[in-house]
Length: 85
Image (cartoon, rainbow, N blue to C red; front, side, top):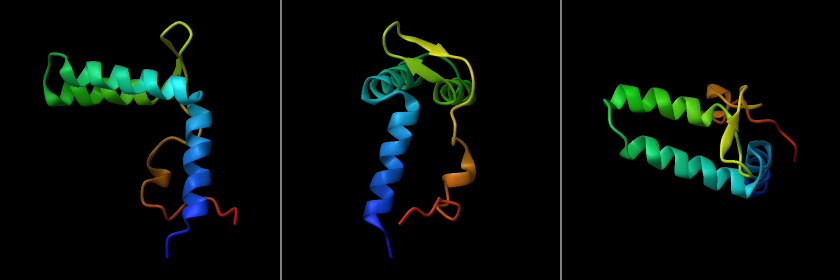
């Protein structure tokens, strides 16, 4: 059974860790630019990983170096989600 409260809390935490809604919008814009850009699918996928694995700074449009806390495949299956019910 899906715990929507837990799912909502996880989504909220991800947005906050990314730097808020403005940073999330900037990341989406950057991903759109990558998708529209030139290059092979492989090149675009590599650039997209770079975009998603760095935090955006919505004030100046640049990204901050370093991995995002909690990013990666650990949460992709849902099996390793933290329980905070």
